[in-house]
Length: 384
Ligand code: PMP
Image (cartoon, rainbow, N blue to C red; front, side):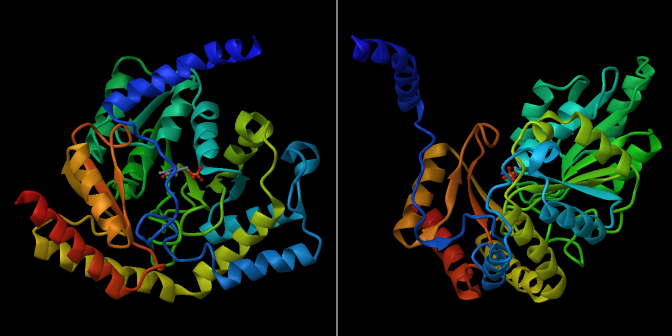
C-alpha cells in the first residue's frame, strides 16, 4: 500500500520528465572526462599545490571543516573575518562580506538592498541568480537590452519622469558567462553616480582574470561609493563562495537584513583559508593571467582563421543555433578527448544553442590550438 502511495506521489515528476524527454531531455550529470574546456577554473587554482597546502596547514592549526552555525550565531570564525579584511583591502573597497555561494550572494543583494519605490534596471542576459532575487525583490524591475548603457540611463530617466523618487539600481555582469563579452562598466558606474543610484556588478567570471591586477573589470573604480560587487570564489579563485564588496553601510545592512546571509550556515572556515591564499596567488603570480591571455590569443587567431567571431575573453561561445547541432559537435569533441559543453536554452536565448569554450590553465597552448582545429573540422563536416 505504501508503495502505491509513493508511486502516486512521484508520478507527477515522472510525467514531467517524460514530457521533457519528448522535447529534449536537457539536464544530465556527465562525468568529468577529457581535456578541460568546460570548467571555470581559469587560473588552474582549484587543484593547485598552493591552495591544497593552505588548507592542510589551516587544518593542522585547528581550523575546522564546518562552521557549525550561521555567522550571527556561533558560526563566525576568525578565518572569515581575516578573509573579509584582506578582501576589502585587495579589492580596494571599504568592506567585504563572505557568502557561501555567489548564487545566494546575488539573491541577497537583489532582495535586500532595493526598497519599495526603487527601480532595478538589469541587463537582459543577467544570471539566473539575479532573476531569483528579483522574484523576492521589493522594487519594480525592468530589463535593458544587452550591454546598452544608453538604454539603462533612458529607463532611469523615464522612471524619474513618471515620478519615480526612490533609488535606481543597475544590475550587470562584468564578463558575461555565456557570451564572454564585457559590460560598459565605466559608463554604468557613471550612470549610477549621476542618478544617485548603485551599480550591482557581478564580477563572477572577471575576478582574478581581468584588470591589470586581477581585481576584475571594475579595477580602478573600487572605492566608488555607487559600486557594490560580487566576486565569486568558485571560478578563477578555485575555491567556492563569494565576496560582496562595497561601502561599509551597505555591508552592515546586509549583515542585519540579508536572509540568505543570516539564516545560512557560514561557509567552511577551511574554504575561507583557501580563498585567502587564492587572493595572495592572484597578487604574487601575475604570470597566470599572462598565460591565460596567451591561450585567449591562440583562440582568437584560430577563430579568425575559421571566419568566426571572437569574444576576446577566456569564455568563447561558438553559436550554432539549433540544439542538435551544438549537441552533435560537443559529442564529437568528447569522442576526440575534449570536454567542451553544449549550452542550450533556457540558459541561453532560444535559437542560440552553442558550444561554450572555456579557456583555463588546465590545458596547454597546443591543446587549445587542437581544440579549435577539431571544432573547425566538425563545422566543415556538419556543413557538408
Ligand atoms: N553569477 C554568475 C555570472 C555566474 O556565472 C555564477 C555561477 N554560474 C554565479 C553568479 C553563481 O556563483 P556560485 O557558483 O558561486 O554560486
